Structure formats: structure tokens, C-alpha cells
Length: 502
Image: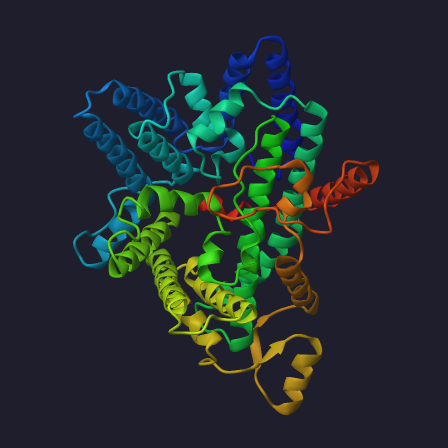
């Protein structure tokens, strides 16, 4: 069951909201927490057909591990925490990387065939990372949870369960016990955020995705210069609006329950450096990697050389977290190397040895790199990755695009025509979507008056002032209703969110 489906919008969500607020007002927060935990587990179980029991086992294990760490003698706390984290990582490795590991053994002749095939459980990366963070926080004595229903809700909370954001215990538990009681306002601003997210998904991400799918599907053979760049741009826009749309929808759904989730996006395609990009893109993952991997590795405390190694290691592991494949490792390594170079350039600029890049040039360079790096993230294998990069470099020729008058001009001049077909309308849509990504205010700016999400320390102002700020009035309600109606008409052709596969 997806957020962008009729059964969710017209059956599941109304029932959950009505029962939740009724229980909260009549029986108190403990009963509303119990109901929400049960509803969240139901949401997961009806969507996870292979291992519906897995999240329950994971919750019980980590809940018990948290209690064990709290009760352990001081000299054994670290051992218990390390064992719990190891079990989580082994489980994640088995379900996410077993098939890939077997393929590598088959490739080198160590195995003849796969002993069995493991199906990837929905959302396992997100709820595993959430619980690893909880175990680390319990060990650091910054979190503790003795009520199983509360812990179960923290992990399985349906707005974030499938594709994030990655939560911290200290952010959520006080809100579960004391959600905002401004029910009419909560429903209004929650519906507004949900409408914005749904519109991003079905009106912006999905049309761009059609172009990206066609291009990458053709790249197994060969792809020309124009098609490679258009397809890569299309995927860059698809994944941005798909994932940021999901995050907005999650924030909106949570607001309807009186609970604010962390903000996950802050206009990353407006970033003027790769460092700024990662403070704006998938903020809760960046925060997790920083707090639970980069800093424990030593961060920048052990010299410049070690900092660059830590950056590269962190981003490679972040890439592998997204999926089992060499392409994800390449994507992570590219971003790790880019961050190391950016830090080195920034340090040299502070010492006056190099010139700081103008903002416009930094933005152009950042977007160029990000688009090039999206290729292995989207490509099914390294062969397609190399074909796309060859096309982008012009090594497969500069044929005219197969678009209306341009194709006709190419035929008159005797120049080849791109094999990948694009409609004039599709390319025009892509141009409009690009302008929205780099010029339009983001969701937090539009909803600035209502503080729709939680900010993460160190990630800047997530809702800087803008002229276009939503006000609570009949005009905005009509606009939201119209946008929601248009988006819902397109639900019939919906696709899954990209991050469901991670």
C-alpha cells in the first residue's frame, strides 16, 4: 500500500486518524500510541509479502538489546552494544547483499549456482539504521525506552517506515507522548504538505522518469550525446522530486497526527558546492553517516590525510547502503572523492593559496558532477554506466535529437538521428521541471509560517524567507484542493517510489 494509492487515501488514512485522535482525547496518549503502533505494523505487513514477521523480530531484538545495555555492568556495556549492532548489520547484509555476494562467487568460479535467492524486505535499510542509531544512543546514555509499544511505534511509525527520514529516539518520543493538539490546523497544514509531495511525485517525478527509463534502457547498446545528457538530467530530476515528494508526504501525514518529522531536503540542486549539496540532500542520512560513522572513524581530528580517508570510507559505505552492486560503490566513491577535493580546496582558499570559486561557477560545477555521478546510481550495471558516460562525452557521436524539426533538419543535412526517441512535449516538460528545481521555493519555504518539520543542527536554515509563503485562508485552501485533485487524477498511472528498493 503506497501513499499515492486510493486505498491508502480513502480507507487506511481516515480510519487511522479518526481512531488515533479519538483514543488520544478519551483514553490518553498510551492508548493512542498502542493504536498507532498496531496500525503502523499493519501498514507494513500488508505490503511486505516475503517476510512480514521480520520487522517484529527486529523490534523485539533491539528493544531487548536496549534494556540489556542499560542493565549491563559498566565494563560490559560496550560489548553488549557492539554485539547488538553486529547482529543488525549481519541481518542487513544477509537480506540486502547475499544475492550480490553469491553472484561474485559464481563469477570467479567458487560456486556453480546460487543455493537460494533472498528477497529484499521493504524498508529494511531505514528501520535497521534507525535502530542502530538507537542502540548507539542508549550506549551513550542519550536515549532509553522501557515501554515496548512506544519503542515499536518509534521504529514502525508508518509515515517514515518505508523510505525515511531516519529518526532519532529523542526527537520522536516526546512528541508521541504529547502531540500538538491543534487538530484543525494540523489537518490543514498536513494536507498542504501532503498535496505538495504528491504533486512532486505524480506531476514532476513520474514524467521525468519515463524519459530516464527509455534512455537507460537503450544504453545497453549505445546512446548518443544528446540522449545521454537528456536521460541523465531526467533521472536527476526524477529521483529528486520522487524522494523529496515522499519526504513531504511523510511530513504531511505526520503533521495530521500532531507530530513533526525531520526535514530531509533543502533545495539540494541550488547548492554551490558538493559539501553544501550533502547538507541539503537526504539530510537525515547525511546526519546518520556523520554522527555514527564519520565521527567515530576519527572525523577530521587526526590530520588532513586521515580526514580524506574517512570521507571516502563514509561515502563508499553510504553508497553500498543504497544497494548491492558495484555501481553503488562507484557512486559512493565518486562523492567521497569529490568531498575530499572540496575540503582540500576550501582549506587552500582559507590560506590564500587558491581563489574561491564564484557562486555561479560553483553551482554549475556541482550540478555537472552530481548529474555525472547519478549515472552509476541509476544504471543496472557498469556496462550501461560506461555506455552512458561515453555518450555524455561525445564518444558515441553527435547525432541530431529525434525531436520534430531538429530531426527534419538532421535528415536534410545528412546527419544521423538519435536512436532514443523523445517527444517535443517531453523535453519541454523536462525544461520546466528543471526550472522548478533550481528556481522555485522549496516546501519548507512555502510552509514557513507553520514550522512543518524539525531542523537538524549544522544543516543551516531549512526555510529561508521567500515571497511565496502559504497563508491559512480560503484562497490557499482552494489552491491546495485544486493541486491535490490534479495530482490524484494521475494516481492511476503511479509508480513506486525509487527509495522503496533501498
